[in-house]
Image (cartoon, rainbow, N blue to C red; front, side):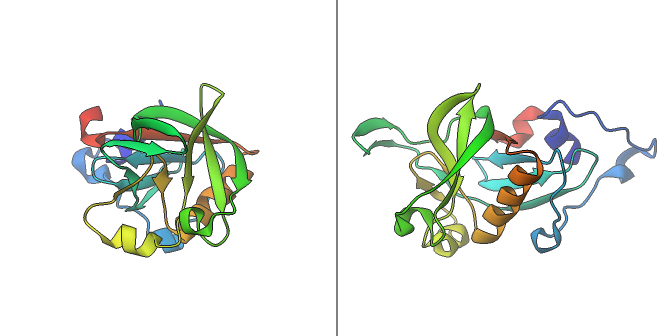
Length: 176
């Protein structure tokens, strides 16, 4: 799994010649320490997120993603499924709607080839309910994460000079 995650960003890591025993287990998110060049991968089929260190190691956790239907939201009608893309977080904002964006309102804005989009990464006031459910397709296209993960991603963004590389993909196994 680790090599698939790294391959999504074109990162090449040498492994031991020991064969199949070089598989890494995920680091518990509560023990995760952000590093320079960490990346975030969101598998929107399984709704599992991964933060990956450039030189090895990853953590994984539940996420929410876009509803798989046509919605009318903010005067727009569109398919709310989270698009599969390579993104970059280039800015953050504080949203005042605590129901939609959680108590702190932190919103990591996703840019597509440096173009501003409506998509982002954030939490909600009911994030624990969303993340504990089997059906986690609850957003209008954004990636939903826990307060703990959002805090890690905010620290990672800051550590990387206010940028963070993101991949949203329909299913990681498809990348093998």
